[in-house]
Image 1 (cartoon, rainbow, N blue to C red):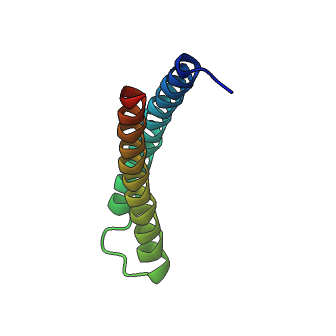
Image 2 (image 1 turned 30 degrees about the vertical axis):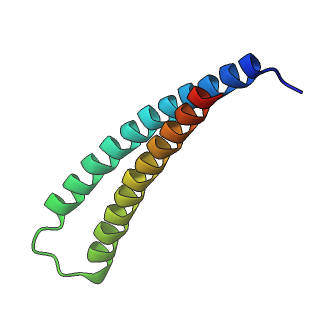
Length: 86
């Protein structure tokens, strides 16, 4: 069985990893924002269903990245609360 200090160290490492994941998500989100802006600019005036679907899918992907970031931050907060309790 792990000691309390080992548990705290492992929780801190998990939080650090989660923080790095958030940084990675932000990089991907920025790339999606650029892709979305270019696609919108390129398809201005187009009413083709495939163009609209592409934009909708990118918007949904971007939204899910925001959700992943929020959930990861909530997990980090909870982990830090737990670490502070023990």
